[in-house]
Structure formats: C-alpha cells, structure tokens
Image (cartoon, rainbow, N blue to C red):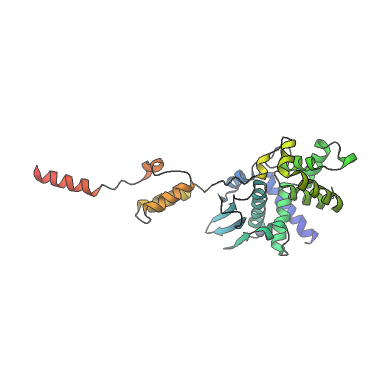
Length: 272
Ligand SMILES: [Zn+2]
C-alpha cells in the first residue's frame, strides 16, 4: 500500500473514531457506534465455520452482518474491517463478504488489506498505543512487553492477542523475535488465563452467540403476517430470533374473527 493511501485511510479512521465514545484509550462499544453511524447491524451465530461478516448496500441502507459464533475480540475486529469497507469501498450496490483469509491479513486483495489497515487504525491509533505504553506500562523501557501486558492492551483496546501483536509490530513497539516470544507465551499460558490474571475483560476471548437484528425487521414481518403474506410458523420462527413469542406482540396482530364464532353469531341471529 502506498504511504499516501495509508495516510488517507488514517484520516478516515480518525474521523470515524472522533464520533465514537472512547474510554481513556479504546473505543468502548463499537457495536453501539453502528447505530450512531446509521448502519443496520445484524449479529447472529451462524456457526464457527461460516463467514465472519459482510457489508452491503441495499437501497438506502448499509447493512453489516457479524457472526457471533466467533470470539468477541474477533467480532470487533471484523466489525471495524466492515466499517472500513463501508467508508473506503462501498459505492453503489456492492457487497464484501469476509472470512478468515480476508480478515487475518493473508489476503493479497488490496481492498482487504486496506480494510484491515483501517480496522487497526480505528481500534489502535498509534498515538493512543504510545500513550498507553507510556502511562500504563512503566516497565516497558526496561523489560519490554510481557504476555500480561498484551492482555492489558487487549482489554483496553478490545482487540485479540493477535491483533495487538500485529499492531505493536507494525508500530515498531516489538520486533519479530519479541513477537515470536509473545506468541509462545500465549500458547503456554492461554489468552483466557492471561486476561484473568490481570483482571481484564475475559469476555473478549469467548463467543457470545449474540442475536441482534434491527427492530424494524420485526415490524416488516408483523406487517406481512397481518396482510396474510406469511404463515404463522414463519412469524414464530422470526420472533424466536428476537427471543419473543406471539404473546409478546399480540397487541400488534390484527385479530381475525374466528370462523366458528361468526357462524354462532349468525345462527344466534337467525334464532332471535
Ligand atoms: Zn473484507
């Protein structure tokens, strides 16, 4: 990637980040930011082997999907990557579908590399990484970074161990030998244990299987049901995704008079 293009991407990532709620260093909840940015976010567990996410433009909507069968830190990076596609690449009716190859950085596709660079700059801007190391990791100059320090960086910036290492390497905070040492430490001690040992956010390392679907999709399905366009069991299946039952939305369903009652009324009327 040309350095001028990298700079453009940093500018874009910076302007997105300015709109986000940030704690001392890291974005607090990138999922919530999608609302603020006007994107329709769908989170659904499609299984560990399914795609990680996609971004597409449909009519006036920008839709981002994130697979929640994947551990949280990876979901967050995928989301940042998809936002990168939206900001940098999504013109007209287009879509980007992402899997392990496009997100891990092994893809040679330029747009995938750009989206990954955008994600890294959005989640871990160099200034904030610098400031975190300076203020929060006092032994850095003397001892370099330990696995526990990486866990601290993960917890603050809401990234995975791998993303933290890659970013620290590209910012020149660790060299390739230190990276290998930290990868070995990760294998020996496990990320979950490292997070626990520093009182960090253990949720990052777990797949939450969250289900989040824009609420207007329920309206759409209820509308179709009320107009006899879909059967009851389809409505029930969709409601299940929202962890709702027919009873929960009963006030929004059009009541069709039961046929038997009609007949009774009619017969009753005749007898009178
Ligand atoms: Zn991509």
